[in-house]
Length: 244
Image 1 (spheres, rainbow, N blue to C red):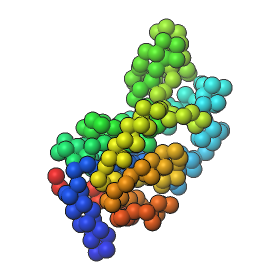
Image 2 (cartoon, one colour; image 1 turned 135 degrees about the vertical axis):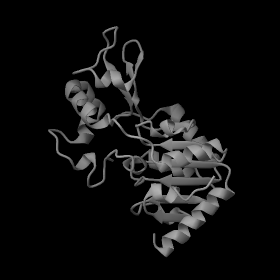
Image 3 (cartoon, rainbow, N blue to C red; image 1 turned 30 degrees about the vertical axis):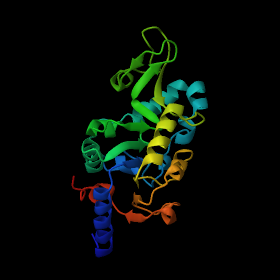
Image 4 (cartoon, rainbow, N blue to C red; image 1 turned 60 degrees about the vertical axis):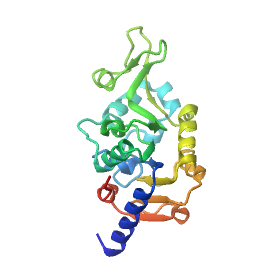
């Protein structure tokens, strides 16, 4: 770590120590360090080749029109096994346990924040760990989907849909309201591992009114100029310096 980044990390750690109402807003870059590919990086899903582009497959229309092909892609690419929370997930859970982090707002659908121990997590795009029957509403875990073929069916005969927000679908109102309230009340907002390119999620940062807005990302984002502190680097390495 070069001297300039170290100085910024030291300031970041001080800001965390000074704060007692922290909210973390994160994206795919938080999970890539656990081995989950993101969607938009050079190695992400959007740069791999399929019969249809991923943004088409992961749309509501495609799910309705070609459910078997949707599930082939879903099982192959979105159900990721053997992954564990990384240091960023764990530090956020520790901050919550210490009463400092009040909420995690995430665009990820992998459940790793909860696996690390975080309790207050607003999943903007849902979770692959939850799946529900479109007829009777019964919920099924990820193993049920993984161990079926074609379109998974409920015991009542209805089709089972992942509890994830597909393209063309709206975000859950209660989740959005909870995230907005948490961000608006925060004395420190940490944004990590996101390009801040996906709306409406990226627009949530506009609800923050404090003076400790920190952006942690490997590359620059369109919002860097708004931040009080910008750190370009590995989120796990940067978070590893936080002491509770």
